Amino acid sequence: MASQKRPLSPFMLGQTYKFQITSVMSLMHRMTGVVLALSAFGFSWWIMSMALGGVYAECAAAVTGSLPGKVVLFLISLALMYHLFNGIRHLAWDAGLGFRIPQVYASGYAVLAATVVSTTLVWFLALSGGAA
Image (cartoon, rainbow, N blue to C red; front, side):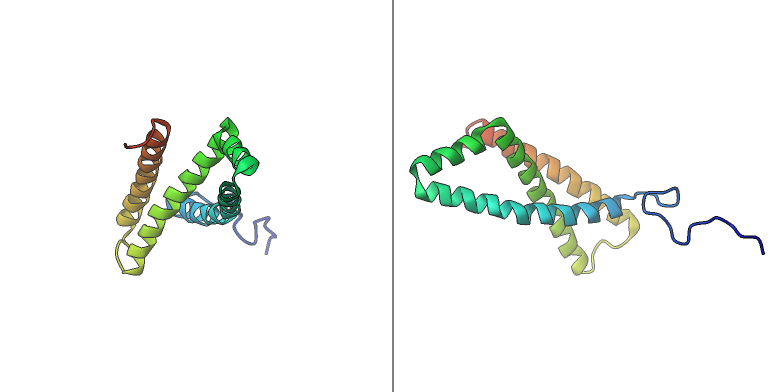
């Protein structure tokens, strides 16, 4: 029997593995969960700064009002919207709905579309002065 130089197991990013929307969205759901958990510390800092007032509130307003602060807030809101809509998708799966492959792909694209639309709407309202 001739020895062949084949991998013993498939490599994640090699020639044998093809990214699919299902695997990418599963990974993104986990990553956004971590981002949201870590951003809770920043949110707590912001709440405490606003409650203390004075120089602390000014510092928090300066950080969140700066361009890097707004970029971070945008990314957190994007993660929040994605995690929300993908969580709703998971609730539908828990109810036994949407397990056929075409439905899985359609709901995945619907989650991505809802994420983009809702994040854009939230930031449009936030930057234009709100819905008032």
